Length: 290
Ligand SMILES: NC(=O)c1ccc[n+]([C@@H]2O[C@H](COP(=O)([O-])OP(=O)(O)OC[C@H]3O[C@@H](n4cnc5c(N)ncnc54)[C@H](OP(=O)(O)O)[C@@H]3O)[C@@H](O)[C@H]2O)c1
Image (tube, rainbow, N blue to C red; front, top):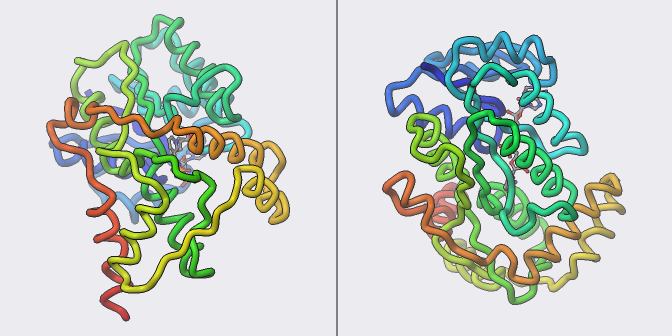
């Protein structure tokens, strides 16, 4: 039976879709922009245009599937969107594979997004609906590629709110591979899988790895989580979100995301991608162009 993938055009969703296609599946996706989905994912997907916050549209898109991959974007109402999906699927027996966040932060009083994940997880666990919960650490594609490297290009330094703490960043492709495996096999039903990269790295190590690849120095600017919040607010970020990031960085700085699990390898049979391999890929075009 096919699976319905939500968030198929974001950081993680396309990798879930591709992994399923590699396994010979023809996944269904629910997207707001069908043309964009086809351009990104190709034609070997079953595209249902619609908004996941519309319960009737969601139920129609999920008709006949075995599993829904539940992901909604970071935002003030992220948890409400996910609870709406769970409600719309109640009594269907459809299994839900839910993407959560960094495991150590998922507590009732954690940072904004993480306490929403905590609520959604609780509802799923108590609902009787079959489920798998995935708790990945921060993505290399977001923390390094989208935040750190553009900042380095613009200023010549990497802002370091983590001090000397390490963080076991994970490649979003490995999250997608685990998600696809849990969609295809029922071995992990009812479980919460904690996903990390292969080792924890400090920002100083990342700066050295980047400098070794670009041939240019990458300095570190030491800042505090409170500095990050102030800078986000100064740039117009809403208060709840600035507070969320301050609290996330405070947890990272306390070493709360330095733990390492072997879950990616256990589930997929492949070791998680390293930051070295990721930087080789991401920095290769710049190197070739210079
Ligand atoms: N960033 C990290 O390092 C990190 C780490 C661990 C966990 N997480 C968790 O990962 C989740 C976000 O995943 P992501 O980074 O892959 O998301 P993302 O890149 O922001 O993508 C969000 C996806 O959801 C779709 N979408 C948004 N609103 C929709 C709606 N109303 N109806 C249908 N589709 C809709 C978007 O599609 P369109 O906009 O194209 O319509 C897009 O495909 C969050 O729960 C976050 O807490 C993030």
